[in-house]
Image 1: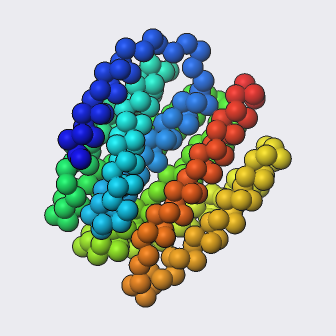
Image 2 (image 1 turned 30 degrees about the vertical axis):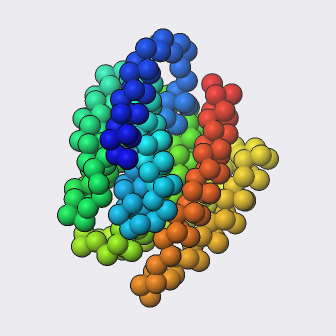
Length: 261
């Protein structure tokens, strides 16, 4: 399974390398794609832990393959976009980490390797965050901040699921619970910030209301973890459903940012 994923990824990389350079690339799309790298850093770790905990393994294998291909595609796009030296430097640092992370993510999940995997996932997250901020500053577009914030929400939803799975697997890494609680709280604050934005359209407001309703339902399942009663399949399912809504929300903000240029 993992060898097949690697071959698929390499073929996609070769094909994407033959594509013509994109013209007139959008700063808002660059923020979205760099932000997507944040999310994928957590999603890949989540799928690794899904396989390790025997949670919807077939789905996890498919998500892992697609996520790795997504990182490769976004990296190619951002390499063509890189607007200045600072952005190029940040992209190169993230790419170096990605090569190490990809290699480990494609191995069979093992408890003894989980600490290193989570460390690389966090490093790629941090470097991708730095890249997003540099692109946002370069754009000078206020609406690009909303693309960033919405994109960070989708990352947080994957991070929450990843940390939940790590706790359910009873990994020995320190700080899992505090990191989980911090991610849940940040998601709450981010959702409030987006709901209060005066730039929201009627469509965005409606989408945010649906996300808020589903989030409340998903959060109710977290309380079971307090009693060490984990429901990973439920958390993974709600995480994926929310991710689809957050992807659409981020695209809506991207279009809003494009119209504001």
